[in-house]
Amino acid sequence: MGTGTGIWAIEFATQNPQAEVIGSDLSPIQPLYVPPNCRFEVDDAEDEWSYTQKFDFIHGRLLFTCFNNPSAVIKQAYDALAPGGYLEMQELNFKLHGVDESFKDTNLEKWGPLCAAGGRVLNKDFYCTIKFKQYFIDAGFEDVVETIFTWPSNTWPKRKEDKMLGLYTMTNVSDGIYGMSARSFTAGLGWTAQELEVFLASARQDLKNRAIHAYWPIHVIYGRKPK
Picture 1 (cartoon, rainbow, N blue to C red):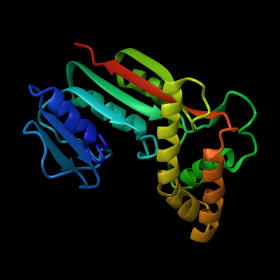
Picture 2: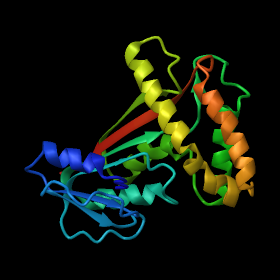
Picture 3: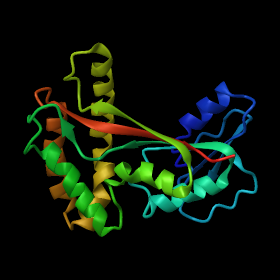
């Protein structure tokens, strides 16, 4: 679900040549040349699913801002699974956290609640990730497991592996923050594009500031459909 560039589907198909892999997304931005056991479809996961076959595994990640009704999408995934099949979702908790108070009153901290407020106007719940485990249970999944990891906001951690993860996060958020914000701030909150650019310039500076010790929790949830 929400395959985007298709990189996950392509890698999974390459590593599992015995599997048939389907990636679906609203945007046809996937490459033309893919493994023979991988194909892509333009589809909206919030529409009624019309697959005739049942799936053994359904995967989605970073879709927390995509759906008006994520619980309904999770229920559709449950119905589309074969008995014993699994759904896995890897989602960002949009609420910024910190190991200390260094992120308080920064524009980076203010960005999230403002973005979420604009999302609410547009019928999007940017904080829905913390509800996903219950959505799995309500849909009928068994053995539901939720594991929480962290994405450091930049390279402030001491451990080498965490510094690298923070570098990835800083780069991805800095490059993508306008795309994540534009609709919420302009259509939702009524900001002008110029006002948004000025605000995001400051948020990007906060994002690069190693004196700000912030992180985003990452929730990995999976569940099994009963046999």
